Image (cartoon, rainbow, N blue to C red):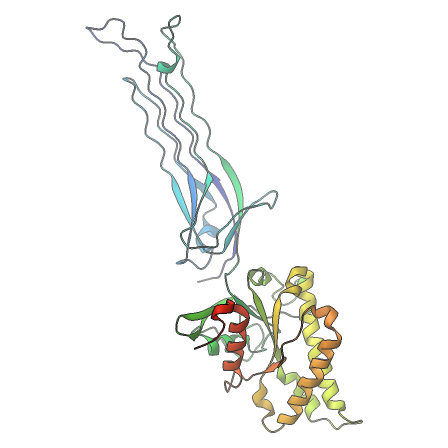
Length: 370
């Protein structure tokens, strides 16, 4: 099913039914007086969040949702039937905004959460209500009130604890398949992942967290290059980001002769720093708050350096020094073993990474893994 995370719809609550103008006419009661009933209330429009939906697919193809109007009143003080209300089901994580002002009207964060979006119009009063001692035969009744109408914009932001970000082919999809039971598409070409994927990572019995695989970013994504940054809104709800760097960028440097001591190590560290800052720039251009989010930096494809483990360790140390010097751009203290080295192909380091993420995400009394 196609992943759709935005939709624009119009909702119309039902019009209230009109009151009735009627007079009691019976053989034994020659002057029965007014007996016009009230109109029924118009139907409401209500949104309900459900964990059984994952996209806004259904709302993309039906743009207008209208509840039925209330029936008019009738004689013998009979009230008209209320209009039928409608319920619109949306995925958990849906944010509803005013289409014109972009004001946030409601944010669904829990399953079965409800929001009355448009209230139906009140039914009009029948002429019975307007009879007085001086005006005993009122020949008028109230019309029903109009139901509320709203033009809404719906945005779905996935609810996850951690998100995987980085360049295309950095190994994000492979990592989420290793960490969880998710099975995203994996291939050896860029932009394999076209939609975000969610996976539940089991840490221990009754201890787990949700991770999201965000489609790859490239420099200039804020200008629409690659897939652009339309999926970055899914990071806004996450507590921590895993910044995955592709270790294959170090291969050319690892085999080059050193013109000076540690030249290849320094060049490799600078290349990782360039890739890291490029993605961070795209995050800041989209939303400056994303750059301040808690983060873990990870170098993937460590298995490529099995014959040169010393080189990868030296690059990690040099990269860390560059990160510490650029701490103003990072605005946080690095973890003791950061940047971490893992291999999604062999599984090296992934278990330790899961434990690091759990320690950052879990409440203090649950951070220890039994």
